[in-house]
Length: 440
Image 1 (cartoon, rainbow, N blue to C red):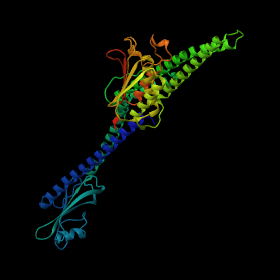
Image 2: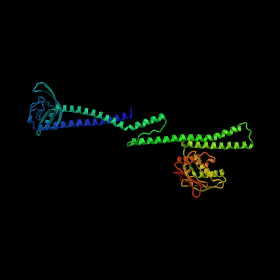
Image 3: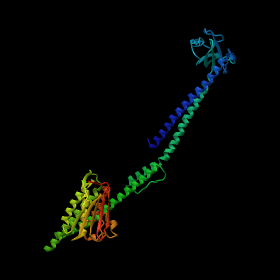
Image 4: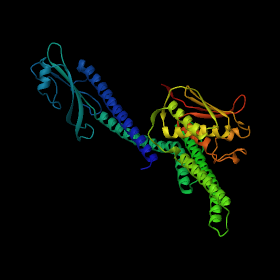
């Protein structure tokens, strides 16, 4: 059953229960009022029995009888049964009471025999004896029958109207859901999340439409990023592969090479293979950026200190200064943070040159790496964290433009940020800020 059908069924069921309860209460309330009215009139007649003694009329004339304390009736009681309860009331042993009885009589006009449902009131008399008054209540039965019929018709009509209204309202209310479903089905068929659903209206369903569009936008951006990543990676891999293939073809050719020429070709092969390895490692690091691994706590200051020692070995011509590495605990991914820190240090070392100085500090969860090189060109600074971006000056140096992109990926993975600026007095400074890190 569809959601619209279930909502309609639930609404109709609730209305049915409410209408049934209301109809039942109305029926019994009306029945009680009708009987109470008749009982009151019978008691008033019993207090003044001579007003209509021994009179019997099927057209709502009362039938009255007086009973002595010894149980003997003083008036015509042929149509009334003087049983033990009435005698007990006449003897003063029972209080007044009411009951329904069946009386057999006849119609004075047609002479036909009648069987009547009557309401009987028995009122003890002060000083002994009792008065019995009976009245035909067939009109009450007829009124209650009509009332039952009306309530049944009203109940079924109310349920039908409620079901129709519920179907209309649920159809209108669920229209955004149907649009979302149709959009999801079309996207599943085409594989293109460029479609959007209308966000009109208010309430939860309107917010659902907005959330759905936000999800589609994020999915579209993710797919576009993936396409660009594949295209850029293909482009970056093609260049060193072409150069490798060319050098290998030359080495395998029939042309005699001088030892110096052969050595240069081999050096080029070694350099290009190193670049290929670094490029592939960077691509793998970016590709596994969304992979889920277990977090662990580690000392960021120890990791930075180990990275600086490695940088001293890698760039011995550069002076590496650590201006207070504050003990800092990070709950995250140690191997990825180690790669990000090394990328920052390696980038600063490459741009420092011989005799350069790199200053490294860590305080309040913020890692600063400052070099004294040429700094960032203003046109390049907003783009340095993009994948495969290389400035005009960087194209003459080894690398694939993935180092700082990996730094940004790792920072965002840890809920932090990274920022590149030009330092006062020359050089560049990169700030890696981690939210939620603790001092130890």
